[in-house]
Amino acid sequence: MTADASISSSQTFAQAWDAPQQSALDQAEIARLTDDIIAALKTVHDPEIPVDVYELGLIYKVDLSDDRDVAIEMTLTAPGCPVAGEMPGWIEDAVGKVEGVRSARAELVFEPPWDPSKMSDEAKLALNMF
Image (cartoon, rainbow, N blue to C red):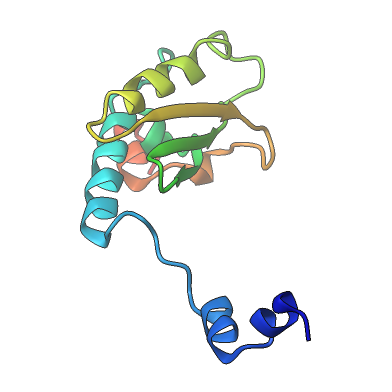
């Protein structure tokens, strides 16, 4: 048996392979960063709508890496939005200022398309949509 075969067939290897992966960040730090990232996202507003992008439901996904890089998938209320070229930068700037975040990258996606059902109750209330 080769050295590689003995390693991959060992009980220790099998247990390590099946074990859940642990993050380099502890849960308290992940919770703090999550809260701070959401607070940062709430500082960015669509200039045509008096509600922040988070409550509007424009943020589809936020991934935080172990290296503290943040990847954001976001959309717009309409593909022809006049600030389409600027809003991802506003998101990156806001999230990039969060203490402990190394970098932030926002990507525009249009699937699924945005619709008013993605708005929070807070946004609907602000826009008198109840």
